[in-house]
Length: 285
Image (cartoon, rainbow, N blue to C red; front, side):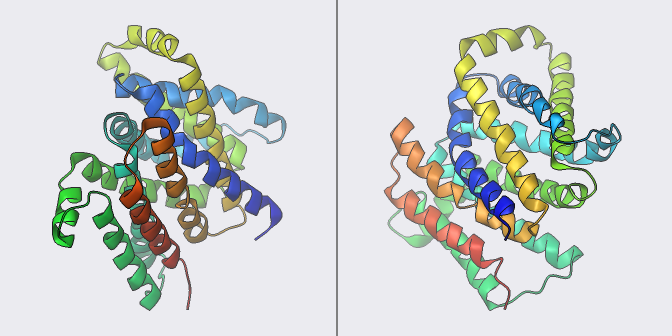
């Protein structure tokens, strides 16, 4: 792993760990559609200065359109879930992103399945039993999977996996700077169309003015955590970069206690177990 990829991946893990906290602070008790729009529209402008270092080709907008549509659906759900459910409960399910990546890799990239990957999958599911502790293991697992927020987060992780696969192909045809700006512009454009149809345009400015600092911090962590992923993907395989990004879940759980006083003891254990499972999925025998 080169120093650039290593630094970018480290930066992504740290920023991603706080990003979910920032999203919750910005979007709590606000319209999730408006919040999602702001958290992607603002980064479009935050990322523009990097064009001094990267070239720009307008055709990237055409190629980024499919992944933008997928991410629009994913992040509308993501912001809603983070804004309305306990962060330490639902964020570990982001680790299922790696599970879906493995399935896609086996189907489309002829990835091999081995014993360590089986253990990794078992740990992913076992870790969920710590997220909502009950007297019996089976009751704990049932309690978690019956939670609407957890169900929605699994859908998010599935959509993210598809989006990441597309990213991996496109970032090798376009540079990380132009691709990230194109993607953020298209996502915010897609959401703005929804806002137009729901007649909520008038709510955009008041929503931002109610929490400008939170929306700016959330937008910044969002923009640069994603840019760092794209930079890492220029040197690393997706099946390495994304599972290692799952380590950010542990940081998020700790932050959820610091900022929201959530009960995290068991959830931290569960998050660690799920993160170990996610990392095992990338190991080749």
